[in-house]
Image 1 (cartoon, one colour):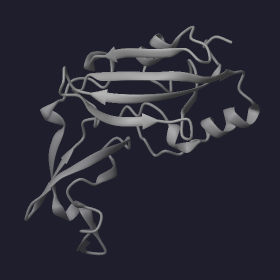
Image 2 (tube, helix red, strand yellow):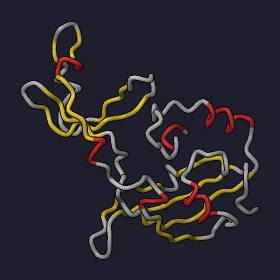
Image 3 (cartoon, one colour):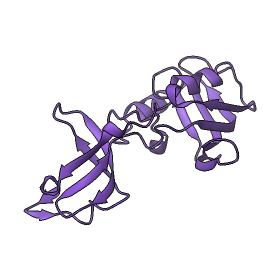
Length: 178
C-alpha cells in the first residue's frame, strides 16, 4: 500500500539539523517509538508529507527541508522580556519552573496557547524565546517507512485526542502521544 491521504503511516528516522559537516542529531524515531500519523490531515509539515507521498513499507527516504518550508527563519522579534511578577504563584516567583532551558506553556493576549523557552532569568525580568525550537534550522531526514494501512477507529481516536499541549506554535506532530 502506498502512502496517500488518510492512510495511517509509521516511519523511523534520524533528524539532523545544520549545514555541511556541522550537522547535529536532533531527534530519532525508532522501531520501538516510531513517528505515527494519519497522512494528509495537517498534523505534519507539508514539505515532510510531500517527500513521503507514494512510498511503501520498506522504502527508505533521505531529504532536506529548508527553513522557509519548515519552521521559518529565526526571528529576533519573538524574543520577549517579561516582568518577573508574571511568573508568580501565590505572590512567590516560581523558580522551579521558570529557569533557563525550560519550556513554558503560555497564552498571548488573544488567548492563543504557545510555548516559550526560558533564555535568561534576570533580577526583574525573564527573557523568553517564542520562536519554534527548530526555527532557522535546515532539517535533514533519513529513514524508513515501517507501516502504511487504513487507520482503525481506535487509531483515529487516539491521534484526534492527542494532548501534546503543543499549542499553535507550529507543533509538527503529536508523535509522543501514541
